[in-house]
Amino acid sequence: MADIYTQVGEEFTVDQLDAFGNYYVAWGTGAGTAAKGDTTLSTEASEARVITTDSQPAADQMQWLGTITADGGKTITNAGIFDAATVGNLIMHSDFTGIVLAASDKIEFTFQLTFS
Image 1 (cartoon, one colour):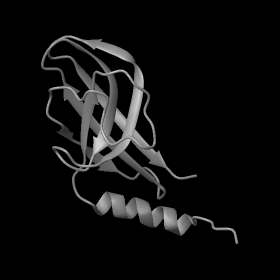
Image 2 (cartoon, rainbow, N blue to C red; image 1 turned 90 degrees about the vertical axis):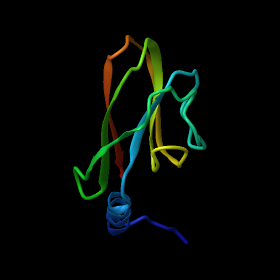
Image 3 (cartoon, rainbow, N blue to C red; image 1 turned 60 degrees about the vertical axis):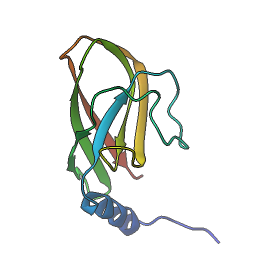
Image 4 (spheres, one colour; image 1 turned 180 degrees about the vertical axis):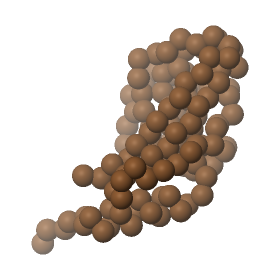
């Protein structure tokens, strides 16, 4: 038996994500590689999570956009989308080469989930 996740199934999942409510972006300063089993960021930084602007660029895509402002000098190495302002579930996690920030510097993050 072969199972296929249909186009309608993908679109339904995106609609459910979009209807959920609020999502939040956070960033981290720790070393590490994002992995499917992650439940937290690598050393989540001191700034409060920021509510995202959510959209569906296509029927089978979900997109989250959020900007965080640094409360002091630090190097940001990872970021993620959560379903709560504190604690919550890590929905997406990304790691990258460190970005050095001074106080009041900002990073705008765009996360996109695309079924294919």
